Image (cartoon, rainbow, N blue to C red; front, side, top):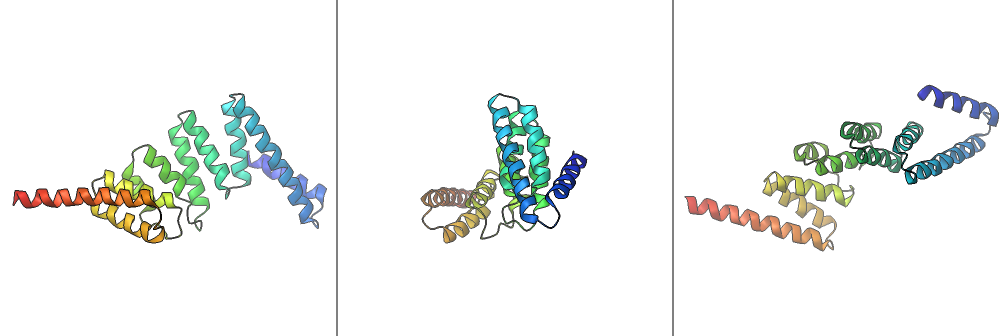
Length: 190
């Protein structure tokens, strides 16, 4: 597939003229627009294998495109190709190491699969500029692993960044009640 893409790029560059990058960019934009329309048509028709193939072409063309990468992963999940879906998300993460949320699609996938330790591995050092879902998924994963103090820390950190997120405040309150109950149970045992 990459050889075909290289040939197309070579032809497009040759026909457009190497000295006119705007024209080459316009050709690629038109090609990508057409590919996107065909993806939609095949998806609507239930032609999932062909949809996935075109999404793979788009990922090869645009490895830094979050939407294309997550569309591919989502389609692979739809046909229950779990390992291929994870590979798609992991490839996006690896191809975009400077992107703050590059690990988020893979972490969301692992969260849905109830692989909470993997979520911690992927998001453990969440950046303050990360998408709110990175904080939410990380805090919930800690909670599901009964690591309540870590969950509490993540919720507090997130709420300091987004104090108007009332759902996060409620989640923090729930975690703190669980922590208090644990402390109460420990003091009774002593």
